[in-house]
Amino acid sequence: MEKLKLMLPAFYSSCTDMVGRWEKLVSVERSCEIDAWVDLQNLTREVISRTAFGSSFEEGKRIFELQAEQAQLAIIALQSVYIPGWRFVPTKMNRRMKSIDKEVRALLMDIIRRREKAIREGEAAGDDLLGLLLESNMKENVGMSLHDVIEECKLFYIAGQETTSVLLVWTMVLLSVHSDWQARAREEVLQIFGSGKPDPDGLSHLKIVTMILNEVLRLYPPLTELWRKVPTETKLGKLTIPPEVQLLMPTLLIHHDKELWGEDAEEFKPERFAEGVSKATKNQVSFFPFGWGPRICIGQNFALIEAKMALSMILQQFTFELSPSYAHAPSNVLILQPRYGVQVILRKAN
Ligand code: HEM
Image (cartoon, rainbow, N blue to C red; front, side, top):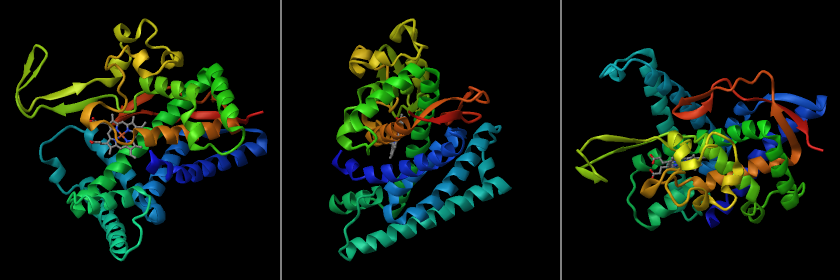
């Protein structure tokens, strides 16, 4: 948590840039229509670039563009008919994917090597994710190879960005529809921060906002399922599962299960979480947007603080509602995202 606090300035800078852009748009006509999905994706990309690579932020951004293109190509590949070995055929797409991978590796390797050299020459490792990774690798002698560090950096990009932007975008959708909750959240934010900068202590006291984020994560979990492969024969209750079998935990189905959540399971009711997650779930494992067990998301506090900061700054400045051009089409392409974007009308609050 202490290390996370060091990242708050990066969160704040990126949120200030986005809110500043929106303010300019609103000041012309008093209201404006934006695609919140595009802007929130840019926001979370910037946050990861700043927090992962700090001073190498601009190079980090280039890596991001390449990773985003790679993700699009991977989605096309996933949606195509599966032909064993096809990925080795030098088609235009496969060649592009290979060259992206090469460029990303080269860029990352360059950033990592420069940072390692600086640390060896006595400079501080830095408070960004790369600095923390290299510091713990050197101190604890974990023995991560350069390849491992590159893979970890790539994972942060993939795991840390789209997930948080969809959490924010579905929150804007639901708060547009449930304007009473939008008003309650704004009231809480203004009570705690006024029009000032959100600080770590205040963020940890946001109760209504936390209830809302939990309910959004229940209804729209960014990752709708978890996969596990059973390495050896495993007993699970009355079942005996042979080795190599893949198991799927359907997060989305469990989060919407009426037996677990009641007849109103499909409804947006943040009050379920008024007394915390364990009361809402009656201590069952029925809410796991960040996974569960030893592989639980290591970025959950990061994501929640970022989401609270962004939402607070949006609520301080604007009211929002869905535009008539918005079409509700959640689409599960690796993560649960809005297929046609999220067009909202922004107005200056008060
Ligand atoms: C709302 C935002 C997020 C959601 C819903 C989310 C969800 C998840 C889930 C469900 C898993 C477990 C996957 C599995 O068990 O197969 C996971 C793992 C992971 N997440 Fe997140 N995540 C979010 C944000 C982040 C952020 C911001 C970061 C990094 C800064 C991050 C880094 C990771 C990493 C590195 C893992 C792999 C952990 C491991 O395998 O040990 N996540 N995440």
